[in-house]
Every structure is written in C-alpha cells, then in structure tokens.
Length: 424
Image 1: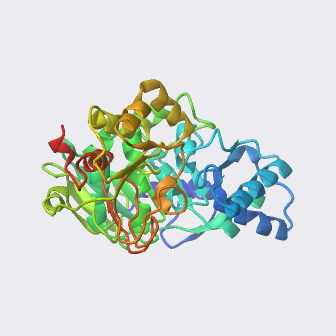
Image 2: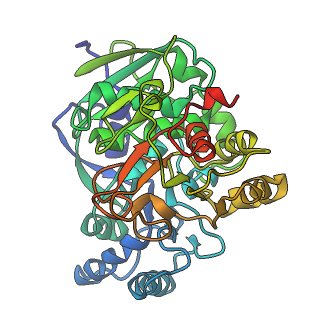
Image 3: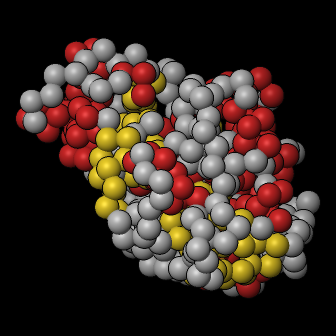
C-alpha cells in the first residue's frame, strides 16, 4: 500500500504547481486550467470586485452554464441569472451557456471538451468531480475561492492522500456503472473519502465507456472526496479527439504509487444495487428491496449522474410499449440541450411521453429539490441521481431511493421498486 511513487492526483497537482513532486498534506499553489460557474457562481461577483479585480485572468478558460433553474422559476433565480449575464458582458466572458444552449454544468464541460487529461479544473458545484474521468483533478470550490481564481488564475490546495479503488470482474445482465458506484459507496461510506482523492483502477474500470466513468467519478462527491479520477487511456483520447478545447497533458500514476488505502471490488455475480433513505451509503442489493414492495409516488430519470444519451436510450428501450403505473409521476430530464436534441431525433421523447412520462428541458430538475418535481412530505421517489439525504428533493420527510436508470424505469412501470432484469 505504501510505495515510493506518485498517484495520479499528486502528479496532476505537481504539474499545476510547477513542482517536481508533491506529497499528501503539502500546501501548493496550483495554476487552474479551467474554471466553471453556474447560478451559485453569482456569489463570486461581489468578492471579485471587492478584491479590486477588473478583469478575468483568461476568459478562454472560464465557462458559465445556467443549469439549476431553467428557465428561471423564481424571482431569486432570475436575479442570479441576470447577475451572471451582466458579469459575463462586463468582463468579456465568451463561453456562456445561457438558456437555450444550456445543460447541466458538468455535462457541458464533458461534451464540449473543456477539461482534458492532466488539467486542474475547479467549479462552483460539488459534483465537478465528474470531470476527473478525463484523468484530471476536478473539484468543487466556494464562491470566494472562485473569485480569487477568476482574478488570479490560481489557488492554494492541500494535496490529498489517495484511496485506490480496484475493480475486477464483469457486469451481469442489468448491472451498470451506477450499481458499481453504489456498491463502492457502501464500502467506503460517505466519510471514507473525506478530503481524499479516489482513484479508480482495475480491469472493470478499463472496460467502462467514458459516460460510465463520468457516473463513477460523479458520486465520488458522496464519499466526501476532494476529487475522483480515472487514469487516461485510448478511450479518453478518442472521446476528446474532436472536441478538446486545449492541448492534453496526460499523466499516469506510478506503478509503485503510495496509497493511503486500497479497496478491492469484485463485480462478478453482483446484483443491481439501491441506496435506501436517508444516505447514499445505505446500500442494499436491489432484489432485497424489491421483496419489500416499496410503492413510489415519483420516478426521476435525470441529473448529472445519469442523464446522458446512453442512459435515456436504455430507459426508452425498457419503456417501449409500456405505461407509467397509475399514481406515479415519471419525470425525465436530459443532461444537456444537445442530448435533448438527440432524444428528439431518435424518438426517445415520444416513447416516454406516450407512456405517460413528463419529458422536460435540460436542467438539474428534480435532483436538488429547487425546481421541477419537488416531493411532498412522506412521498417516495425512485431516482437516478446522486443524493438522498433528508430534504434533498423537497420535504425532509420524503424518502428517496437511488438506483440505475434501468431500475428507475422498471419502477415507474410497476409502481413499486422493481428489478429491471424482470422487464428484459
């Protein structure tokens, strides 16, 4: 477990800091390759001006995406949008994904090549970790930190220790990357990665597609981690070949890298998993929960974790010819406008709406309990999102079960938590 080499996150932070090497616990000043803001980034504008800044260090390295309240659903949200639009005009920020071009911020970065291997990327959202699937250190920061980044282009960071999660085996029918990350959360827990880097490795991870790797790194956030990473390989390079916004500088962990902890996961024979209320690490095998006949009021297929075109295609294939169960509201929200357009072209929207689902424009939607699909007290929701803490999707008394997109669709059809393998 204790080697002499460097982990992937240590190598990326050394590169960003202009140092030969770094060690866990060391404070470094890293040069930022990409800074991202969404609506909460509006809180950076006042401290940016208060520190006397007049221009952004590099407008080509800043992305703003409107994604939580789309279109603005409250006066407060409308004000946040206006602040960001005005700020972008004042300091000449050209990469603004406003309503109509919008998408969930992490997906906007992923599908447009804004983060590449070796980058240090920061964003005003805790799930910025998702971009670590590119072989980058991607992490969420607060609004005051972001104000400093916008002005200076760098920030100080403490180098985190690294947990390596090694995964082997092959997924069985109906088992997905979402089931894998839930299984890992059950092992690591919500505090097991606190201010650590989580590095995913092993033959199973190597076999995952880029969208599946995004799902894996996304929920590193729920482990309390600073960042989650997958070392770049040919899949990474192929994915970015036509979309990368700046040159790649891929790095790999040393074979003798020093890890604080190793977690081994074998997926052979693993069933689909579900995180039960009220924590993402309250994980159980889905068949066990199915036997309890948990009726649901709402199903949600969306969020930055699982609303890419692959997820929606899989869901639509299960939904074809079926109907949403009586008494169930089924909300489907694509992760970006580009994905919405793909769904339109492929007939996916029609498949869902004919079945009785509501297919929305791209947004964070029901995931965060601030826009569409808010839950009432004591309601139950099956969700493909990443968090099920009390009050996450509305009333604190509501209960949220986290599962794969396929399991969400199977549940919407049956009206109670269901195993997608029964519908295959």
